[in-house]
Length: 94
Image (cartoon, rainbow, N blue to C red; front, side):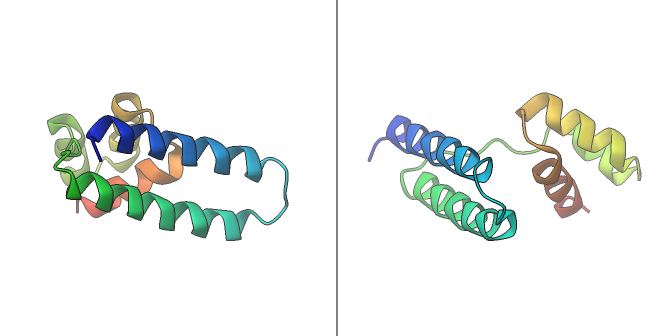
């Protein structure tokens, strides 16, 4: 599977789950399913040799300096990630 296909598949899955989340009250279940799908997409990307971008040096510097909120904000600016995803990513940098 080529990298473009993997990325398009990942975007489609995220969009589908986003639509489903807006229709149901079971957000925790959907969050767990989304996390599982994201891990699978990450594995697929790794398998086909698509490198995921690492944290920007600004984000890394802010996180290590204890400026967590600023690091999260910068991560979101750079990646377009949601708040929870950015928070989790910054916490993994410590």
